[in-house]
Length: 171
Picture 1: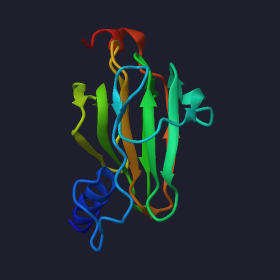
Picture 2: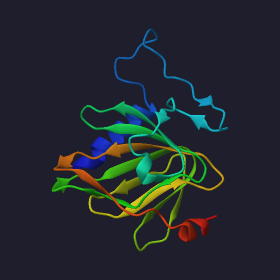
Picture 3: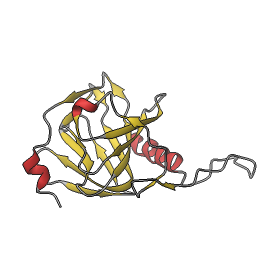
């Protein structure tokens, strides 16, 4: 439960749902969302091509690391039809990942379970050790914040791509 409060605090801060204590009219104002060429409103700027992890994705994705200090948070943008491979976030203690969906329509699926459709405002808590994938719907861009939950000896294990047959069954 201690992580629940941290997660909520991070989400509130990152998404700008409440003003920061001590903020004044002279404080920088939150950025307005912008509609980009893909037709979706993005809260954070889209990063460059996600070349560091491209080998683990089907399609094109973009990554903008918002922070790497303390809790790593990346703004991940998926083009329509783009998704990552099945993967597992391992940790000896703690760890896992939280997805804060901010724009578009996408999917999340755990191994052996039905896929879950995702929209802006959805939150997915992925415990360490759970095999899963996430990405965009075939006809929509999708954006989420990927929050890496701190833990001991955290590491990712990248696995096989989601099969075309299984992905194509999704609406």
